[in-house]
Image 1 (tube, one colour):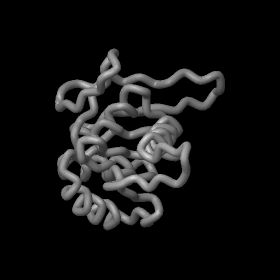
Image 2 (spheres, rainbow, N blue to C red):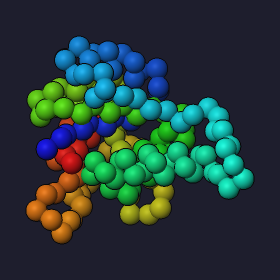
Image 3 (tube, rainbow, N blue to C red):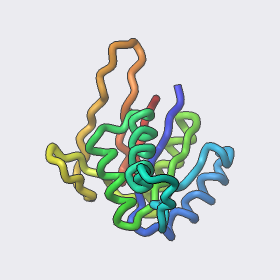
Length: 153
């Protein structure tokens, strides 16, 4: 079952150093990536909403790996504020090591809230695993010390 660690960085300049260190662990380049909100959104048709399309695509990807709706909102808000996301998918030990690297490089903790506004905080994080009608469960499997979250999907 794949595991992915996601780190949100308020300062996108910190991501490159973290990614280089993660790749040095032996992660294939295709399993490590970063994401920032595009500086501009190209309109391709009369009924397109590029910013919304970008956020919907990101939300779907995060939900696919097990992020909750409040976590997803917080990640999207972090990108809106100029931050960057880093993703690394791999084995248990590699993902744990990647989470530690992200935390050392300044990944911020995402705090779930019950309301509609997400919070980015260095304070506690509630663990919720989505319920499914199958024998396979997805969701966050542990919270590393710091901000990077590990998801199993």
